[in-house]
Image (cartoon, rainbow, N blue to C red; front, side):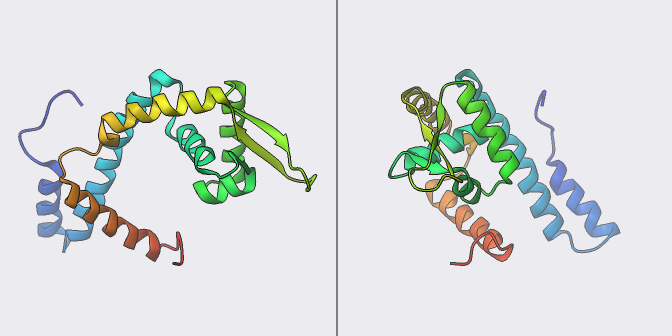
Length: 166
């Protein structure tokens, strides 16, 4: 975006929607969420690019860092990252090509391949984490309490959509 607009285009669209179509609350909320997603994605991509990572690859490295054994089956990675197996394969392929993870055979199940973070992967993840946390993952303009409220609200939407059952 080149420069800020002199008005809020989503608020303007909501007014027009209200006048011509009907209640605009949900439309305005969804449009706002979609625009904020673009803003956050751009900020996070900018922070991760110097580290040679996309957000998906960064998430995979973080997930492996969180694993007790520093490795996980690819199937489990897909479940936790909520990605299709093909997407997980592509992510792991790229991370492996960059030397950030390696595939290792499962010690007791020959059908399962484990993905293990390498020392270079840990180093890259640490540097990338510093980059994204220094920009608050692109989520600016909110207080800590407002960020908690936003997380709570988005969690309700995710739960209603079936992301989890807790």
